[in-house]
Image (cartoon, rainbow, N blue to C red; front, side, top):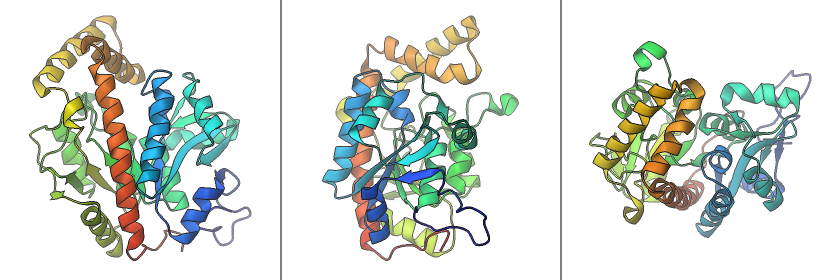
Length: 325
């Protein structure tokens, strides 16, 4: 049985039939120890083989070095898996055709018995269900340019607003409308903290010129803010934005210019909808001479390490009450 227990009066334990928590993760959660959720879309769709497997392994290793237990989340054969074996991790990394699963897609994938890689929103849905309070990823989704007419806004933002989890990331992806993304997070009541910075990082870039709600300078300080939020009964999540390591960062003006050229090509080719984001990321990779891949790998490793430290700091304090307790 997964942490949280069945809901009263249910004919079947709520969620337990669909969720398999790895023994190490289940034990850590039961003990109140530090656990960090990791998404699987970054493995399947974010990086090419074999870099994706190497980075996934390095992220798990970074979490462990910090003293926490990694819990990579995916759907395999119609069951949510919270914590993957090395063989399962490699299986996902070798399977680029595995679909992305956001919050809305999980029940469909489970009912059909398929495989899937969880996005930020999908991972948050599962992490919140089993009681994981810290999650490391690359960048969250957000408000897309032109959303005032297309309504193209990532489900990540709504998932953050209703899941008690601290998401360690490098801000939102560079191709998004960052000012509107930050404004919507504020409207949703999601605190955006800068880790050693007063500005929102812009994924490949260390700065964006946009102020965060507050700067925190240690894992303990970040954990204290999260603990205070949940103690107040504010059950939503928080963003801890960590700048990409300086050695791998790209220049902000360069990224804007490369992105503008990529968007122009996408428009000329008629690329839109779900295909647009992967197209633009591929264009950024090609036009930057592969430096976006280096930056992506560096920030994923850094975020995993920070998340592990924050999870340990959170576990060291008074544990917040679980949603189902």
